[in-house]
Length: 355
Image (tube, rainbow, N blue to C red; front, side, top):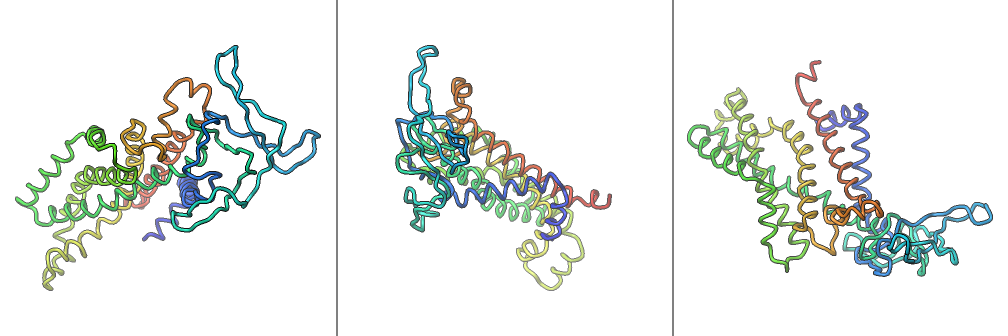
């Protein structure tokens, strides 16, 4: 079934592009330590709000050269009354590929010091500029993306087993059991999820680490989202629980739990696949929104949400547009997931298959 979905998915141009984009993003995030020129702890306070480094391949004589860059030097613009950065052309800094740089641990396990691209010790390479603390935006995008792009999948690992089993039990037993369970699920669904997240995040102690906050956000998102999923599963179970294969399982003495798990819930596979692909974007947006409000992942740890927070000032939007890059990546990732989810839904829809 998965192979058939993948083959038909690749036939759709937009879904194919979206899939390639997501594969590229996750590949870059997995090798973030190697691809990033700097480690997650790098900071140079003298380089606050430096614009993206300019890469040159033609030297001053008009000849082809190895890629190189110049450092920026700070100056005060008396006309506009602000600090500006100009290229210091007194010294070239050549780019180095697969060279030694700042030491790090790949996936926090393997000590390494090779980076995809870096420069000499005196040079500074900021591919997407720096933030107010002189931290490389490009490196932080890679490290922050690991949180923003994985929180949805982690939440699904908690949400879907609960929703499947809860909806399966309610639909199979029916009657009073179904009524009580669905009233509880509806009560959970009535909770305004985003406001609840804000309240819970705001009362968390400041001593919590970002990892602890991250895991707590995952659990909160899962405990809020399972109810709507369980309600749909319950409806699907009601439609199949009286079919012949279920009656056959009963006749051979299979337990109720085995009938639900082994025979009924697998019939919801197509819905589960679609729901998973369409649910991930909402969790990405939820985490980004919380971090943007300062209630999610805390500095100095990065996520796309708290990186985007710095771009809310109009002066940064005008003079430092590179700070908007996290918002662009959130838009691309959410759009890609939605395109894939819509395509999979069309593939698994019996009516569209007949057409």
